[in-house]
Length: 208
Image (cartoon, rainbow, N blue to C red):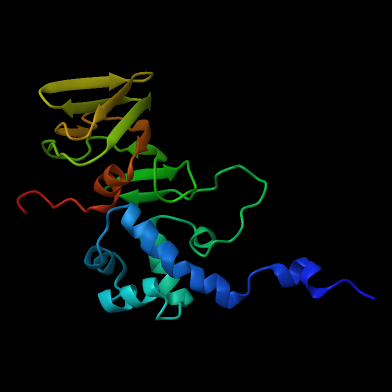
């Protein structure tokens, strides 16, 4: 007699319906981990709030047209979003992306929690007086090359290559590159800091 069907690794793998059914809770958990509201996600993706809500609850079937903007908004690869099993290769193949004039190279794969990035800040960024902001979380920065200006509370610091800074983000802070050369920074953000530094678009000068 042949082997029972339950011993067949192919038949033991989750079917397409099971995979898609698991994406809704994953989408909700990822959004909540990052502290993003449905209206904010709707604005970032162009998908209506009602559709997003139905996707997260499993009442709306996922399509590639919906998954692609969600993957871009959450900055995670599509295979992670649908829960494709990872391979034995531990290397991170994150694609660089640009936000607010800076280039971010992802150095971690898992959504939520702490996320590491290599940041490339162009000369003269942001092109106006630095604004300090506060939010939940903790930030860590290490300058790989160039010089980074860091405003932290009452301190106005210039970090050079090989210097690091860590701080509670309840302290007013902001950073920029006042030099004529690019700055490369290794950064680790919690979910709140990641959302603030990468996802929120900065208003142009003179606008609220």
